[in-house]
Image (cartoon, rainbow, N blue to C red; front, top):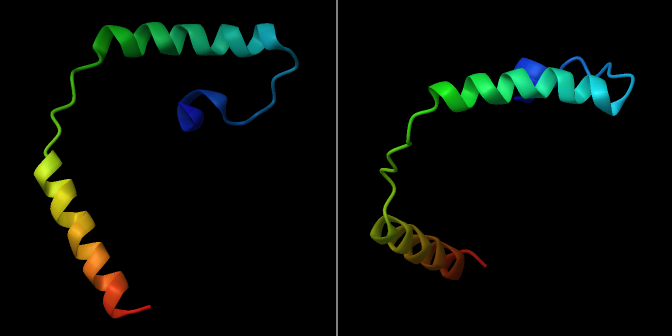
Length: 59
């Protein structure tokens, strides 16, 4: 949103911000698709365990 709508940050008032954000929000909501996460809870547990081992080995 920042790169597509809010840059450059040259708004003169909050109404101008709303006028630029509303059409973007409407368009995004009309085309958005659910995101399928591939990083699972067991993946997170594994990552945290590896980070814990690494931290213990390298204080």
